[in-house]
Length: 137
Image (cartoon, rainbow, N blue to C red):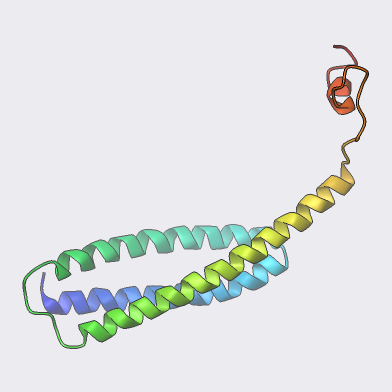
C-alpha cells in the first residue's frame, strides 16, 4: 500500500462521514414526524454507510500498518475523520433519544386504543388471559 492510497482512503472516509452527517441531520425531522417510510430509508442508507466505512477502515488500517513513511497531511486528514465521527456520534445520540420518545408516544396511543383490563378472575389471573382462552381454565 502506498502513502497516496492511504490519503485517498482517508479522504473517502471523510466524505462518507460528511454525507452521513447530512443524513443524520435530516433523520431528526423524519423521527419528529414519525415518518415510517423515511425511517426505513434511513435504516437502509445507514446499513450501506456502515458497510462502506468498514471496508475503508480495513483498507486504511492495512495501509497505515506498513512501515512506509506517512504522507504529509495524513495526520490532519485523520483528525478530520475523528472530528466528523464524534459529530456523528453526538447526532446519533440525539436521534436515539428522540426515537425513544417517539416509541413512548406510539406505545401510549396503542395502549389507549387497545386497553388491557386491570381486573383479575377468581383464580388471580388477568381477566384478558381468561377471555383469550375462551373463558375456560
